[in-house]
Image (tube, rainbow, N blue to C red; front, side, top):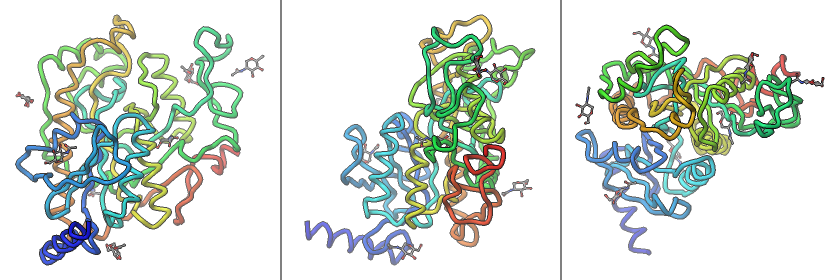
Length: 375
Ligand SMILES: *[C@@H]1O[C@H](CO)[C@@H](O)[C@H](O)[C@H]1NC(C)=O
Ligand SMILES: *[C@@H]1O[C@H](CO)[C@@H](O)[C@H](O)[C@H]1NC(C)=O
Ligand SMILES: *[C@@H]1O[C@H](CO)[C@@H](O)[C@H](O)[C@H]1NC(C)=O
Ligand SMILES: *[C@@H]1O[C@H](CO)[C@@H](O)[C@H](O)[C@H]1NC(C)=O
Ligand SMILES: *[C@@H]1O[C@H](CO)[C@@H](O)[C@H](O)[C@H]1NC(C)=O
Ligand SMILES: *[C@@H]1O[C@H](CO)[C@@H](O)[C@H](O)[C@H]1NC(C)=O
Ligand SMILES: *[C@H]1O[C@H](CO)[C@@H](O)[C@H](O)[C@H]1NC(C)=O
């Protein structure tokens, strides 16, 4: 043990002579990539740009993905959380409270696949979110027992029906996280030289989302899109649930957010990063949520919901590839422009944080229990 500590300090000393990536035995990453399962992680291994062969093992990592991997200089690290909110929250907590890292100036890049709303984008598209909305925390009644005047069986906690915000005492604080939009724009700009991967089978799967309908964006070629993400432990499919998620996203953000991707982790990850920011351990203005569409959240006109949910997912391969093709531009951009730009941070011009306005700043949230329209 003593030898290992000594060795870590020695390694850091050597590295410290070359960079700032290490101090007090802590790794000081410039970019931390957050993936959710092995296939998302694998796109970052065996690439020409960097090698994640420095392996860190510490308590609280998922048994399935038991290490965080970094580059030797500590500039880039990658963690795999495991899927769903409970794994994301537990794993990211283990990372930020491990004492292995100094994260005060680290950029976090959540890089995972997601279900995609064909009203906004398509399979293979890569999105950057400003709002992450938790749509799983709601009241629910079974679809077969919905009152005749309810449009859906899901409604906000403490409310009396769909379309209403949660009542004041029922906000948990995690319903919405707003991220640094200036950083999102900067990341989006960095990706501009990226050329997206696509496949013939993905093109064929896209085609039935008629260009003559609200699903036109689903039928067109994949692009890099700025639009928002929804978190729910439930992996759902269908028009009606899709519309419910669109409506819930609008209600929870006072109409600001546009729901376009659905996944099972981001709120949980953001909640941990947010609390660690409140504890002075990291900087919530340095968080980027990137999600690539692997499958449609709802069927095309003549497809059943079950075929959409259980059928083949030809968008999966190009979406994984595109996480790398687009994400690498962001990682390389942050590292290459560290001095003089990213080291100092990208000053947010919008509100960032949770629904309560917990981060001390000049701007207060225009959503949540204290927003005027919800009082
Ligand atoms: C981290 O690196 C080690 C050693 O190179 C490797 O065995 C392991 O699979 C890597 N971790 C992940 C999550 O891929
Ligand atoms: C973390 O790094 C910052 C500089 O980015 C430094 O000011 C701070 O003292 C470091 N914290 C620890 C606990 O090493
Ligand atoms: C549904 O109808 C009941 C009984 O009239 C009424 O109390 C309730 O407010 C209505 N709810 C919605 C969501 O319209
Ligand atoms: C992004 O690029 C556009 C067009 O070149 C530019 O106007 C804008 O200032 C850039 N934004 C950021 C945040 O870098
Ligand atoms: C997408 O990636 C696959 C797998 O590497 C490759 O075979 C294919 O040629 C790529 N297609 C395009 C259009 O980039
Ligand atoms: C979504 O909101 C619109 C407008 O209020 C409403 O017409 C529609 O029925 C809602 N859909 C669902 C599934 O709740
Ligand atoms: C997850 O985040 C979204 C938006 O960031 C938020 O609406 C939701 O409540 C969060 N859920 C949890 C459990 O943190």
